[in-house]
Length: 89
Image (cartoon, one colour):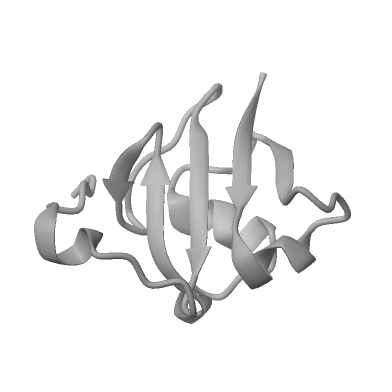
């Protein structure tokens, strides 16, 4: 099983698939930050992150079967004003 990552906006260019969806193997991946690193995406390039539909942060733990959505800096959403980010501390 793998982690499904959906990239939006300009981040779609980081994948070979035009729809911006990529599956990555869970091995060596513990957090959203690790997912971004595997895809060569810098944290500063992102605005919002979601794990399984929940607003999340870079330290959020991920596991096999999780769905991660990543929005670029130029696609800011209102989530940061209305929802608390989930982090694993």
